[in-house]
Image (tube, rainbow, N blue to C red; front, top):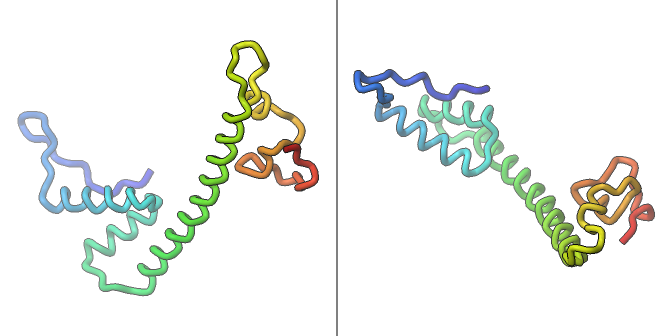
Length: 130
């Protein structure tokens, strides 16, 4: 676990006391988390920010790498969404037939799910069942 802030002092009332700098750091951390930066990167960026670091290629490259990772993740999420939509569309939801969603998730042989987030290392496109 990465500790980004020192433990706040307790006031006599028992409430935590935060300095203005602590509040600003918490806002920085919240914004960085909203951009899905990993905690290690947030710690690094926070240290640079606290030290008043100028704009550097290192910081720009870190942001670009994160953007590329998010772009790749967006593609994965879109594939998962399409898979779930197809599974939901194929589900009879009649309370009588076997659940096609559960069957697809529990399938031991390659299925159309293998093309998405459940793809195994050995699955070949010809092995999938539509």
